[in-house]
Every structure is written in C-alpha cells, then in structure tokens.
Amino acid sequence: MATTEARNAGEWARHWHYPGVPGLDLLRARYVRHSFARHSHEGFVFGAVFRGIEDVVMPEGTIRARPGTVVMINPEVPHSAHAGVPEGWSYATLYPSAEVVAGIADETTSLRGTAGFAETIVEDADTARLIRAVHRAAEEGNALAADSLLRVAVAGLLRRHGRALPPRTPGAAGARTAALAKS
Image 1 (cartoon, rainbow, N blue to C red):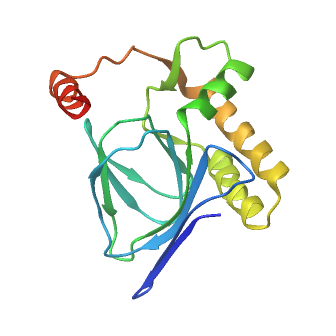
Image 2: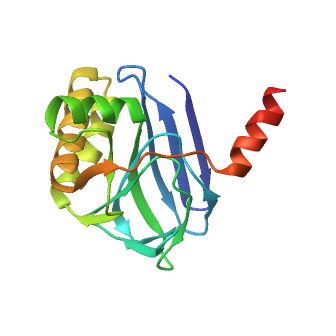
C-alpha cells in the first residue's frame, strides 16, 4: 500500500493506493492555504467536501464545492483548486481508473461508448456519504465493503448524471510531442 501523508500548519493530506481495490487511489485531506496548480488525471475524480468550501477551476469556470455536493471530473480534464473560504476545506476524493468506471458502466447502465459526465458538480449528499464510506472501509482494510461501496457510488452517479463522451482525438501538439519522444 503506497501512502503519502503530509501535515503542515493545520493542513494534512493522505493520498494512497489501496491494493484491495485495484485501479483506485484515494485522497483525504484538509487544506487551508494549499492550492493545486492546473493539472489533470488519467482517470476520474469524485470528490466530496465535508467541511468548508473548495473552489475548483474548470475550463468552463469556477465551481464551489461544499458539503453535500459531489465533484465529478472526467479523465484528462485540466483543473486547479484552492480554498473558497478562509477556513479552507476538508474532503474525501476517489480516483478510479477509466477502466474501473467503464466496467461499472458496462455492468450497470445502458451507456455505450466512453462513459463520462456532462456536469462537473451535483447536489448529492447520499453519494458524498458513500465516498466517505469507501474511505472508511479501505482504511479499515475491508476490501469487499470498499469495492462494493465504490461500485454503488459510481453506478448511481452514472445512472443519474452519466453520458457517453465524444471520442477524443489527440491534439496536434500532443501527437507531435509523442512522435518526437517515440523517435
């Protein structure tokens, strides 16, 4: 189990991979002054704030994640984040691989193609609680519960908010960089 923990002036973070659920990374943290520079992930991001407010800067604008909301970020979508209030935010985030989400979509929905989300944030206190429950189960070493709760949470989000994403074509700059690296 790879774990990264950091604590600094009331801020703390634990980012880890739980081997009991292949294809899933987890982050639980409290941030006040910390901010995330623009970045993206290969897989999905499902975040649930349980205290404070996180401002997430997306290509279409800034969203304010607060308790009772779930942030859903599709793979490779650039974003950044920072505190939305002076006291910061505490949250639990799941980072399932695209393959994990695709498998859940195939098993539980009628979505075909690449499953994803049209919305970036939704009011969904029940799923926010499920995200925290996945963390608790993983921290307790209960792989069956962590996997089951993850599947329930993602399947619900997909059924209520999922859609088939348009096919991605690599950008010219990315294709050129890849070709240069390959040669």
